[in-house]
Amino acid sequence: EQFVSQPMEDRGNCLRKHNVEMDRGERVEMVVAIYDSADTVRHHDLRTHTERRQPLQHTGSNEIYVKNRKHRAAEVCLCLLCVLLLTAVIVCVCFTSERKQLLTQISNLTEEREKTLAKYEQVLNNNNNLTEEHKQILSKYEQILNQERQQIFTNNIKLIAEKEHLLKENKIMTEEREQIKKTYQQEDPFKWIYYNFSFYYISSERKSWSDSSRDCQQRGTDLVIINSSKEQIAVSDQFWIGLGKMEGEWKWIGGTIMANGLLHCCFRYWSSHYLHSYGSYCVLMTSSGWIADRCDSNKKWICKRRILK
Figure 1 (cartoon, rainbow, N blue to C red):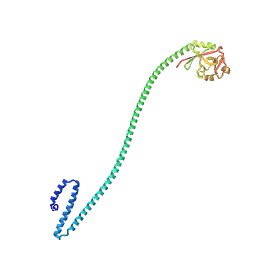
Figure 2 (figure 1 turned 30 degrees about the vertical axis):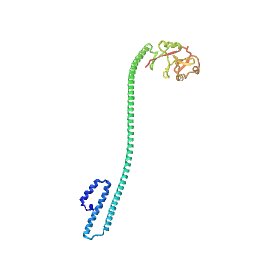
Figure 3 (figure 1 turned 30 degrees about the horizontal axis):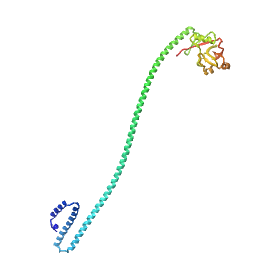
Figure 4 (figure 1 turned 120 degrees about the vertical axis):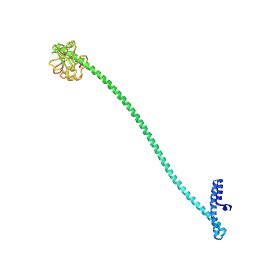
């Protein structure tokens, strides 16, 4: 009753003093008490005003009215709390769903980022490897190129030296050939014949194969040795050449065995007796080919002296 009868300002100051001294739970109870007191005050003012205008009513009905007002206020507060709680739950659910989506997106982006970084590192490593291989290939190419260039330069120097040497030799051989040619032509121009860098002496006398060979040796030559069918000289008589059959084999002077090609080329007019017999025979050159005869027969002969190019 004293609290109701106090002025509003004094009651507010009193409540603030009590609130400062109370803890949080007591403050909540105090707020409820304030709302109840306010309703009581309003009800008291209304009742006072009504009592002034109307006759006083029964005290029991006032208490019922106050209780109803309290229940209504509690119901309103409860509804508000339910609405707030439902709103909070909805907001929480929405935020939770969005949070899950954001976390999923972040996880996906992180995974993509890791994959991208891995690919980037792989590409970077491949690029480094290719760069290193490129450098190695360039180094090898330059090394090979330098070696080939040096080899070509060395070979070029050698070829130039060989060319100069060959030119000198050719000059010397040419001078020697001309000198020998002049010498032989001055000695007997009708007996010495020049053909394909060689001089051929065609005798007019007749001797055995052995005597003919000695005569050629005295002239600084030997009986002619035929190396190819192109060297077959067209003659109108029989002439000894440096080929004979000793111990079943046809050999040139010096012991070289005659090639089978010349055997089939130039011995086509021979009889099988000369080709396959084991006696000693010497070869004569004729206009139609080669023939074999006894080595002690007296025939003309041909000497040959080779002059290098």
